[in-house]
Length: 277
View 1 (spheres, one colour):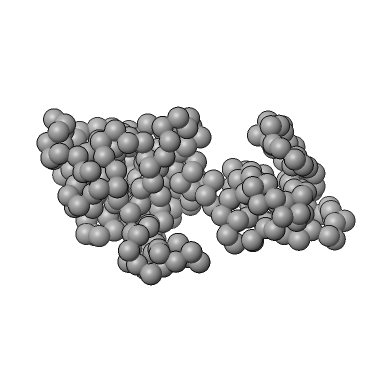
View 2 (cartoon, one colour):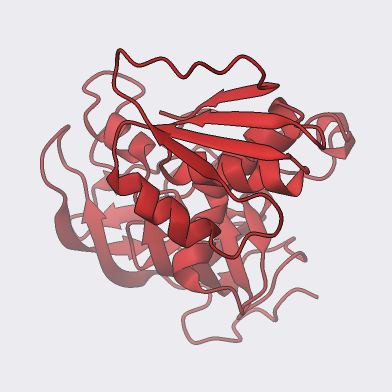
């Protein structure tokens, strides 16, 4: 059931909080006090408890031309707690632990109902500076200047507003510093193995690049039943991380190999090759 209106003292009112604001492309973020509007219908205001940095944040932070725009609040890998909800929100309620996602799931359109796709046609993905349904911002600085959203999330802030179609309720027992990766890095990597490459049981999988997405690809391949998983990277420091992440894996553990730019693997029998650079 939806939370009763006005249940919290802050419900229906703007919240003053801190945010890491990007004022100009490529320049250091500035910690400022900002105002966050209450959620409109189909929207949820959440308190961010942990957020991560994705390379996409860096890419758009450097971008001088559209779709780059400033001032902006970046961040899209996060986990938070629902503070208040707008009208027509029944999926979550106050106190729920949620992960915001840059991809929407309206649950109503043919694509969201299909098992073949998750590319929502009602609220399609785009690098927009606004909320998806209203094309307005929920952020202002203390001078009243509008601050732009990023990927419908904007998690470099203490409170943010997200459309309910961009939220997933999760088990509160998941550690926040792990849960925050689900919204982008983990889902991208696991999805690459499971949905894009369609890794089959018994396959040999080679992964080039062992960052967070590459490690998620390895986990996705393991869940799909891959018999052999080969991780390839030029950075030897990654191998200690890989060993730590996969030390408790059941079945065949992730094998790693260091190469330089001129090296050749000499492998001819893998069924799946994933680049995660």
